[in-house]
Image (tube, rainbow, N blue to C red; front, side, top):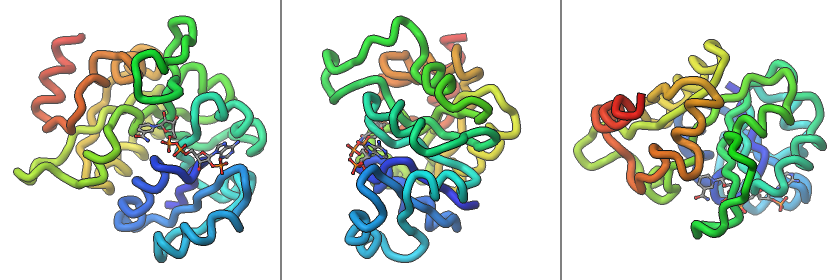
Amino acid sequence: MAIGILGAGKMAQMLVPKLVSGGHHVTISNSRGPESLQPLIQQLGSGVSAATPEQMLAEADVVILATPWEKTPAALAAAGSWAGKVVIDATNNRRGPRPEDLIDIGGKGSSEVIAQMVPGAHVVKTFNYEPIPVFAAGLPAEGDSGAIFFSGDDAQAKATVAQLIRDLGGEPIDVGSLVEGGKLHGMGGPLSLKLKLLAPKEAKALLSTLR
Ligand SMILES: NC(=O)c1ccc[n+]([C@@H]2O[C@H](COP(=O)([O-])OP(=O)(O)OC[C@H]3O[C@@H](n4cnc5c(N)ncnc54)[C@H](OP(=O)(O)O)[C@@H]3O)[C@@H](O)[C@H]2O)c1
């Protein structure tokens, strides 16, 4: 698949090597233009290129959102039409890692807010809660794949994202709809509080206590 990433920071850089090793071509983008990303492209190696957000969006089958919350509305608006795209929302409504860095969005789910900004797109929420160093470090030592929660409303988009999670070495765990499921693994939700990758059995057991 052609995977685009809106953003080229910590989150994007963690995902690129995993996506490339899963056989995908990845295009990263930022607000400062592809030239600014050339040193990073050299460092990341083959299978990844840089483009403007508009080019990235036009060419991608699946787009991962990896921009800071407060910059995301402008970034989405500038990129063009999102209709028909599968959009993975990895953003969180926070300014930083501390509890007081959480941005009040009036009780809505953060991906619910994002979905309203990308009309016609099929939004799937995932990768938002995984602590990057843990996920980037790979699978747990026992060889059990790490559970990755995801939620969304479109069955086909969810199947695409579930396969992508497998390509990255994870085990997809479907948490339900974007609004209700999304709140479970969104910031502050009961599934977002674990600071390690759960084994699939552990993740399913935890999820069953919440339903
Ligand atoms: N880091 C984590 O551990 C982690 C874990 C889970 C989820 N997340 C979520 O992932 C998102 C990104 O986090 P991060 O840590 O990767 O942030 P980051 O390192 O600050 O990177 C943000 C990226 O977004 C780009 N950007 C900013 N404004 C933009 C715009 N208008 N158009 C296009 N690109 C723009 C930045 O590049 P320019 O400034 O050059 O445009 C930069 O490449 C956040 O919503 C965060 O909550 C992060």
